[in-house]
Amino acid sequence: MHIRKTTGLSPHYSTINREERNYAALLFAALCLPENAQRFLTACGYHQKINDEFGVYFEYAYLRDLWHTLADEDIKKSIIRNHLEIKNINAILNLPLKEINQLFGVSGQASAKCLQYPGKWSISKYHHHFLDNDDFLAICKFKWAFNIKPDIVIHLDKNHAICLEAKYESSEGYYPASMQDKKIFTARGLVKHSTGQIELQDYMMQVLLGIQTDFLFLVPNPKNHCNYKVITWAEAFNCLDTQHMPAFAKTMIEMISKIGL
Image 1 (cartoon, rainbow, N blue to C red):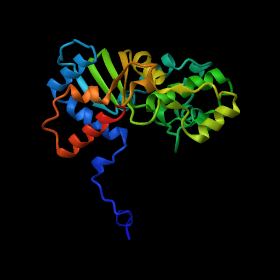
Image 2 (tube, helix red, strand yellow; image 1 turned 90 degrees about the vertical axis):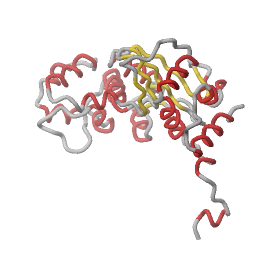
Image 3 (tube, rainbow, N blue to C red; image 1 turned 30 degrees about the vertical axis):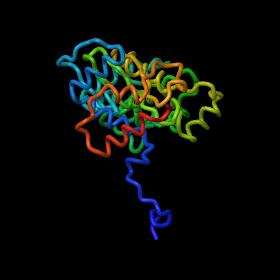
Image 4 (cartoon, rainbow, N blue to C red; image 1 turned 135 degrees about the horizontal axis):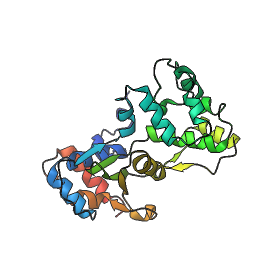
């Protein structure tokens, strides 16, 4: 006997959905209509008109995808040299490629042909090679920046953006996230050196990518996120035209808009 039969419950998933990424995806879909995007910007206090450089992106992974367009190993080295401020970085980058990859603890087989993606560097491996805590923390932050994906990023143009972090019940996330990595931080006396989502997004967007960025929490209740600029789900969806969205989407929009009221 399957679970729905046991419980006597078989609701449409749209009526019980608690996955915040699904709600973020609905907002993304609505914002893909230019009229809605303009309404949303106005509601958030932005008065720029949409131009040819405007774009809305779900689970934004600019650093990851930019890295994978690079074929020039010297450019990859320049990225690391210019932005990873650790001791002996020049000497490290003069090593053979395989040794560099091994030093930073890439997951899987270390390549001798290319400098591998920093998001694949493994804390459990490289923490043995970098005993200085300042260097270790800098490498962690650099690695995390290549992995973090803001829920929605609105590019006003190539050099200006808004990061939207969608929340249903969860609070701001912090890194390290895995128990294994947290144990390493504890062993190194770095329990109080976690990095919040917004701090990391700020580092990725403004420091590494050079994009002037505002950060906005999308939440059911603004009282739970008073440290940041917020917009509620109700405010976000109420300013948009959703009349042509399918029934399940309208149900979810109605549900998320009522939470926290």
